Amino acid sequence: MELYINMVLLTLLAAVTVAIIRQRNLFGVVVLAGAYSFLMASVMLVLDAVDVAMTEASVGAGVSTVFFLATLHLTRSMELKPAPRFLVPAGFSILLVVILIYGTFDLPAFGLATAPVHVHVAPHYISQSIPETTVPNVVTSVLGSYRGFDTLGETTVVFTAALGVLLLLRRRRRSSDQSSEKDATE
Amino acid sequence: MRLDLILRITTKLILPFIIVFALYVHFHADFGPGGGFQAGVIIAGMFILYAIIFGNFAARQVVPQPVAEAMVPLGVIIFATAGLPALMFNENYLNYNVLASHPEHGQHLGLIWIEAGVIITVAGSMLSIFYALVERGR
Image 1 (cartoon, chains in turn brown, orange):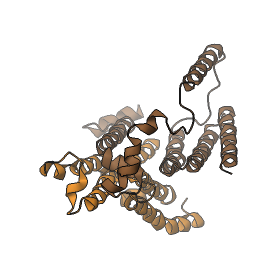
Image 2 (cartoon, each protein chain N blue to C red):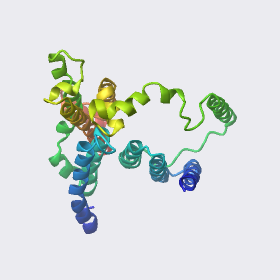
Image 3 (cartoon, rainbow over the protein chains, first blue to last red):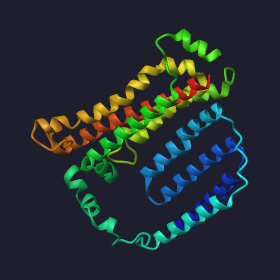
Image 4 (cartoon, rainbow over the protein chains, first blue to last red):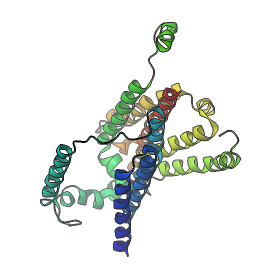
């Protein structure tokens, strides 16, 4: 059953991706990207990664769609015509895909229990989370209790990123407002 | 959307449920899925929905722009202070065992504490970026 759900979801993902590539109207692209995020959240849900699914649904399908729409309000909503010379970008993309696929050959098989990531600290987290922290949700105890310093760093990254975006977006206020108004009208 | 009655009434009905769900995601994070990041995004989404339906001016009266921008560093500060009690008791930074009389209670309290910080930072960032985008559009 899970296999069929995955097949349907991944087929829909591929269809949405093709639609995004073919769509020239950016408004449609934003809506399709929201649908893509929602399908991705469903895939994560099938993979039992509920926390990731929740993040994808709220950030990918929710807030970022609003941000994209607000950005479209500031810019044009039609994509520019593609450049006539496409051989170099196409060749570069194909090369990148080949390199990435070559890289996957060294990855352990999907779901392999003896993969390096599953034998290092993960068994300790899974077996000791309840005795050590009494927190049943291992994701939360790893994020907060075991790796709290990492999460503090991540929160600082969110702070820094927001700071950068706000510095770019906010209009500069000069000491004399009249001169800036004059600049705007000229 | 001043006259869109159905959207306005539906939004009014749905807003309290969104905020209760966000608080559930926050306070229930040690038992169920979710956490501060998701709850922060949901709270920001609620205010953004309010701003879309009832107008930017109404949203700015609920959460003024300086408040949203002050929330961004405030959350990091709240998160960082969660580790200070452990330092006073000669433990590792961000060890929550010392926060309550029982280490287990301390762990749960510590998680809620740090995730409150994450919520405030994330919700503040999302909301202030939205405000900045809208302000730029006028």
